[in-house]
Amino acid sequence: MKKHVKGILLLAAVMMFSIVASACGNTNGSGGGGGSVNVGIVLPTKDEPRWVQDEQRFKDALSGTKYNTEILFSQGSSAKEKENVETLLNKGIKVLIICPQDGDAAAAAVEEAKKDGVTVISYDRLITNTDAVDYYVTFDSLAVGAAQAQYLVDHAKGNGQPLYLYAGAATDNNAFLFFQGAWEVLQPKIADGTFKIANSTEAEKLKDTKDLSRDQMSSIIGQVTTNWDPNEAKNKAQTHLTAAAADMKGDVAILAPNDGTARSIADVFASDSAVTSYVITGQDAEKASIQYIIDNKQSMTVFKDVRTLVKDAMGMAVEVLDGKTPETTGSYNNGSVDVKAKQTDVIVVDKDNVKKELIDSDYYKADEFTGL
Ligand code: BGC
Image (cartoon, rainbow, N blue to C red; front, side, top):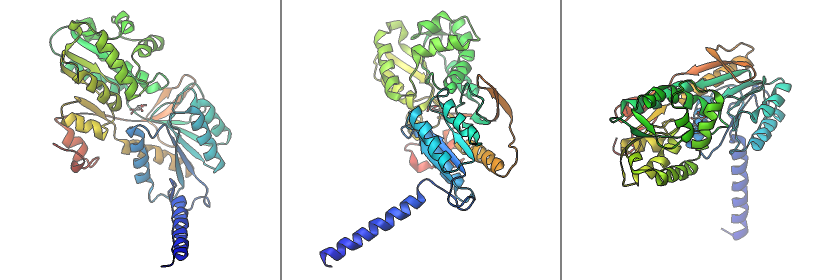
């Protein structure tokens, strides 16, 4: 073939591909508004497997729906998040499903949406201190923390066992719920001497208080936050182990708030020869953590079936679009109003039930793991 003919064909192929690619994008469905978007979905970041998982589950749930949807990521930035909301408003959305990067900062974005008459559904994380949130779909986050703590209690070894505490980002309301749920279970076991706090003077000061105020929790979370960042978690764990006296090593218990941070904290503890054994929690049932559990490197995770959350959020959106009132099961106060909520239960997973809960339920495929 002559060179310039080849060139023209190649150009034509590239053009065809880009037309098809832009037509597919993240937009699903057809009809329902002549090319405009009916439901806008904004997720916090692609950098954490948890939210990529949610994107995939949304895509799975959306194929075949009659409404158009579009998913945008905020990449850890509240400014980008607001820009995403504005982009979607310009495309004519009627419902916004949004998981905020920062619960307080997202208020401005959803207030704009409300002004446009859009129904706002807070997804997984509550948007705080604004009345511009109509609904909240969530897992039982207090139960997540309680399950993590209960696992540590059930696997406690003897008396005075060193307990390392870690928490999520203070900008995420969930971090407080997880910590509160965990603290209510751990505190009596700290008070009775089963555990000894190894890495937080603030927690140590509050060891006789079961019901912590938001400010008291803030003071602890301020010391042991990971900001949901595995690197920050790793650095903190290293600092804590460097500072720890010999009696704060040996057999230890570690409250890690989610899987991403759990894996990096676990790696740090595993590489300290003075740590004889560790029990460490997690949440999200991320694939990498399921492999860690199979390999005895992470003890447990809390499985939050994202398929259910997506189904609830989309179900609500469709009801709103169809002019109906979505069903809710309770409410959450966001500092300004009681937001009607639909809540989903969580499941504790460790090596004993990982196959039953995650493979037999078709959440993951067995061949995605080794040594199952
Ligand atoms: C979510 C967790 C997630 C964490 C970090 C929380 O709000 O509920 O599932 O691991 O954020 O992204």
